[in-house]
Image 1: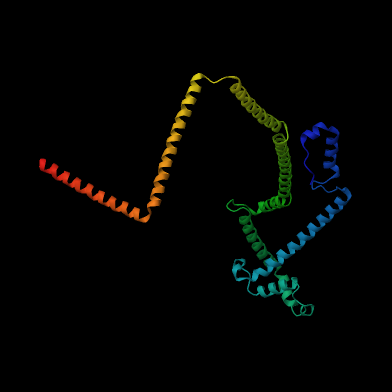
Image 2 (image 1 turned 30 degrees about the vertical axis):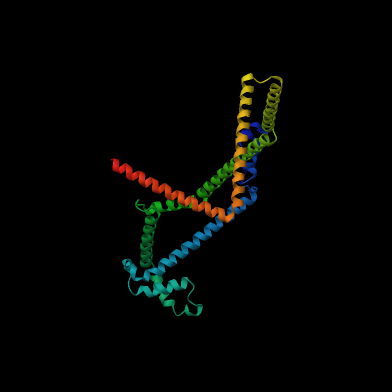
Length: 311
């Protein structure tokens, strides 16, 4: 098959267009093979001879098959005499080559009967062929009422569609599919090119350099602002209110720190006293605590009674 050519290419190259049309018209076949006129003529003659031989052979086979089927019980519509069926079977067997040469002399009488009644048998064969043709019309065009006279044209049209039109359609569809596939590959190549360019610009191109420059600029600005803040703090004295507030905060922090240290010293002193007292001192403290708790409860109970009596 010839590869598709973009019409724009043919328009830009007139000489190539002439060469391409000459190749398609005289030098190459539609399949892409080299066209040889002499050999093709010989092949066409052989093809016509083969078609004639096949037609003759198939005609003989159809006649013999129809003749063999005349003796079937399903074909009683032929109205043949019963004494003709054996002769028809013998003649059909002899035509099919199923009778040996040595047996033909014995069966010559039956063959003579077959030949003498050829007109009746021919009419029966014609009837059977007409019935077969009617069935073929129904199969070829069901529901359209195709006549036997139109069967030959319909068969030729179907054969042409199957041998010429459909292969040509398949070839054209294959050509269109190939062209579409080439366009798809071109689009895919363009997409990959654009993707590669985008990646280059992102990682190594102007976009990446711009991003790095922006980050470096922001870092430099932050460093400059920090230095400016330090210079400003060193060159400008803080306000008096701010200094007074810092001193007040420092004094408050110092007094609080001293108070915490005093409390820590008292707590450490109490712990030392508890350690010196030992277990006995701790038990005495516990007993005093229990006695004080009982006294507090007793006093609270007496106070409650007195308040109840006053009410």
